[in-house]
Image (cartoon, rainbow, N blue to C red; front, side):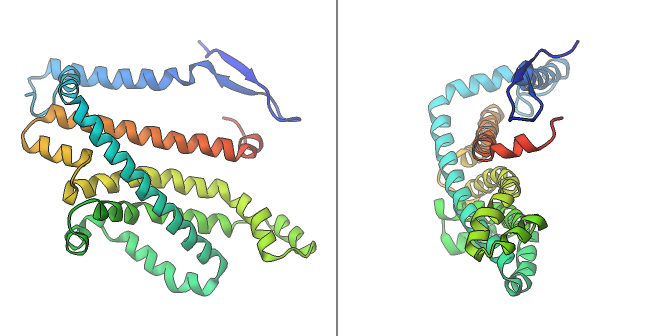
Length: 271
């Protein structure tokens, strides 16, 4: 049976796009299947609740700690947004410098690659020495984890300007700033958004790792505390909230990309 579809007007000269009516239903079905399989495992096999709680136990734990969990979810979300914002600023500036000046690329790109290859957990004791406990080391961990994809995508996008457009700007005697503003940056934005969409979940990971190590709040701290008390159901509730935060922030980026770059969907093929 084929999916019901509706025709969506497309740009002039382009074929109409087909929007599946079931686009929102499929994720719900997938979630239901995953939760159903999880629940079935806890019913069929004699698994202790402290090892793998059932979905009703997790829901019960969330209800008991709802106020605290939501408060810590807000703290984690704010930290993710701050850490991701710093990563975007630092990453785009470094990426633009790498794309604009070859000596800068040759001097610092190997160092950036080496720094990215270092497991950030190995820096956790040093972060504690440098910044102590609190939000500062949490933000620093998020930035260290998330900024490299932004650097790489920015540099790649800015150095991948179509040759015909670059030749056109030279023939029109455009300045470097005019070329950057009207050609290079718009052409690089799709690639930059790829790095942003990779970096956002990494920022969540960085914040949670920081909260587990030296945070004074957030869902990472909740997971450490509840798992230490063998309250696995509450830990699963916190993990579920982390998943919700990651999904919402990721799709907000997807929405921003569609609103800011409408020409990308109009000029690319539809699966």
